[in-house]
Image (tube, rainbow, N blue to C red; front, side, top):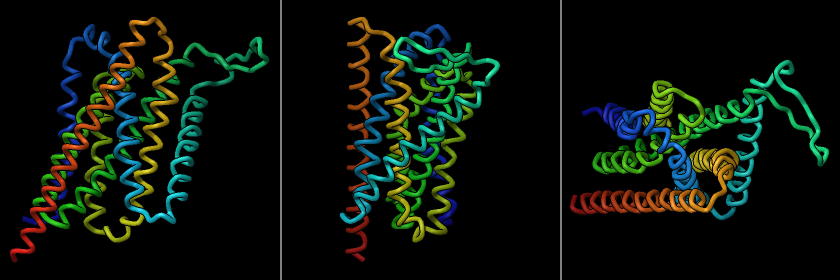
Length: 287
């Protein structure tokens, strides 16, 4: 079978399959969703931070030499600043002078308020998660494409590992989009749209892997920046709005659950990839 066709099929499975599996969340009744959503935001916070610090950033540093570590760290910092500017522009776009009023608080700080300002902040978080997830999926597509170019068996196990790794994160993404005010249909549409960048990454890897190889660590760094920014700047402030002991303990437990699940799945995926590489090496040795 044509290698490009296999890459397209399995990158689509690796990206879209995880979204469809996570979309079972959308089948729940609206009342049930509303009860689960606050917990989903806590879980998503842990999952995003774990994906960034346990998965993307270590992989990015593995791809560069020691002389490039400072440059890559600067790229992560630049990514955080760029996503801050992007979110500021998204909020500013919806906050027109006729709808916003400015007042000075007791400390002398200026604040702009509007009836839709809080909603705009939530919607900007939804837009950010779609952009960040698109970058992350694009990198996953490059990894799957590179694995297929090495060995078909390795490509298959890598795509399955990516799908398994993505499911809990996609559940968190659905929770964030619904929390941001998106309808079920729009949340599903934007998640599927972001997942299709996996196919784009796989096709580009097939045609231009040599050129993309040097850029891969910087794509990983930018994706990690988006996830860190969303978790720290958008989700955690939302969690701080409830300060009672019971809710706070639930939030901490769910954040840790998100971290533990992503770390565990990342370890399983890594073991599967190592088994595929070992099998490929034995096959080459036998030949």
